[in-house]
View 1 (tube, chains in turn brown, green):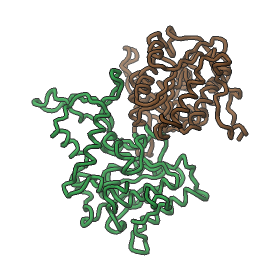
View 2 (view 1 turned 180 degrees about the horizontal axis):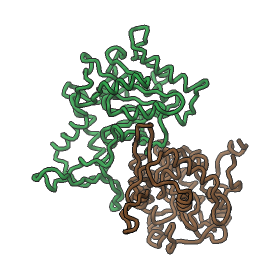
View 3 (view 1 turned 180 degrees about the vertical axis):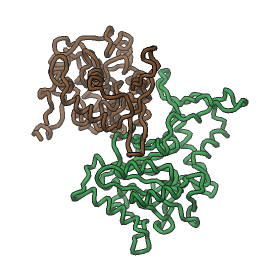
View 4 (view 1 turned 60 degrees about the horizontal axis):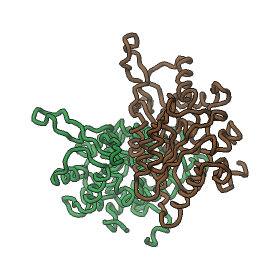
Length: 297
Length: 297
C-alpha cells in the first residue's frame, strides 16, 4: 500500500476557481461540507451518491467500451446459449485486463483521475457511492471494486434475463430470441434487455436497488437527466453534476451531435434552471487520466 | 438508547445443547467462529447472510401479513391507479403501526426474538444481513430498519412495476391490467408482479441485487430451498438453516400441509443431505416473541 492512501482524500486534479477553474471544485466541496456538519447535516445512511459510468467515470469514445467486449466474445465464437454468470464474469475480467483501446492502452487507462479522487473524497465523508450505468450491470461488476472501489452490490445497470439452475446450483444468463429480420429469424441473442437502466430507467433502478432517493448524482448526458432531476428535486441540500466533454486535446470533444453520451441544449438549460454544476473538462481538470494508468496496485 | 445495546450480542434465547436444545445454537456459533478467524476466514465484504421474512423473521399465520394490509387498503378504497411510491410507504407505516393481528397485538409483536438476536450477532461479526422476501419488497422496506435493523437497500423482495414520472419528479407504482374473468375485464390491479422473489426467484434476486453468493441463508419453507441450496453449494465454509414451526403452544405448528410456509419432507431430506441446520422451534427457543413487544425504542 502506498503512503498516499493514508492522506485525507482531496480533489487535487480539480482546478480551483482562483486558478482558472469554473467553480466546480468549490461547488462539490461546499455541498459536502454542508451535508456533513451544520444545519443541513444529512445522516450518513442517507448520503447516497450515484454515478453514471460511460462518459462520467471513464471515456465512451469512439464507442461504448462494452461494444469491443461483445465483438471480442463474438470473435472467440462464444456460443449464444445459457451460460453460467461466472463464465461471463471470467470473460469480462480477461478482456478488461488485456484488450486495448484503438488509441492504445487498456480501457481502464481511460478512467478519469478527477472522478477517482471524487469517489474517494465522498466515501471519506461517509457517502455510499453507487454506479448507475446504462451499460450492462454484469459487465461492470467484476472490475468495479478494483478500479473504482465500488463493490458489486453498489453497481446498478442494464440487465439481460438470468435464472437459477439447480444442477449444478448457479445463476445463468438466459439468451432470448431476437425478433429481427428474416435472415436473423430464430437467432438467439442477449440483446433483449430485461431492464434498461437509462433515462427514465435510472431512477427506477435506483429505487429498486437502493430504496432511497440519492442526495448527489453525477452524469454527462441526456441519459442521466432523469436521475439528476429526481435526485435534486428531493427536500434538503442536493447536488447534481454534469460533465461536459470539452477537451479534444486530452480526451474527446462532443455533446449534442454525439451518438455516445449525447448532451443536448435542453439538458444544459435544465442544468442551469436546477442549479446543477457543469464541469468544463478542458478548464476544470488538471489531469484527465490517472498518473499510473494501469492502477497503483 | 438502552444499556443493553453496548453488550456483545449473544444468542440468549437459543437453548444450548446441554440444556436440551437441538444443537442449532452451537451450529451457528461454530460457523461464525470458523469464518471470522483461522483457516476458513472469510473477508467481511463476503460475509453476506440472507433471510427469508415470512415464517423466518416473523409469523405467517393465519395468513401472510401482507394480506390484511391489502384488505385494509381495499376497505379504505385506495384507488387502483398510478400512485407515488411514497404514498404507498406512508400507508404501510400507518398500517404496521396500528393494525392488530386476529390474536391481538401489533403484527410486529410477532417477530421472533431469537432471530433479532441472530441478526445482531451476525452484524456484530461483520456480516451484512439481507432480507430476501417472497412478499413485496416495498411492503417490508419502510419498517425493516426500525424492526430488524436492516436498511432499505438490504431488502430484496417481490415487486410490481414502478416507473419514473418527471412532473412532479418521483417514482410511482404502476397498476397493470389483470387478464382475469369476463366481469373483471379491464379492472386494474397490482397483482401482476414484475418479479417474484420466491423459490427459483430468490437466488436470481440475490444475484441481481448483491452480485455475490451469500455464505449463510436462513429460511423456513420450500420457497427458500433454492436460496439455501445455492448459498451452501459455494466453495468454503457455508451455512444453511431452516426453521421448523413445531410450537403450537407459543406460535403455530405446521409444515407439509400448510398453505403458508409449506415445508415438505423433500426439503427436510435435502437439509439432512446438505447439512443444513433445522431449528425445532419448541425445543430450541426459550422465547419466541420479543420481551418488549412493541420495540425497545
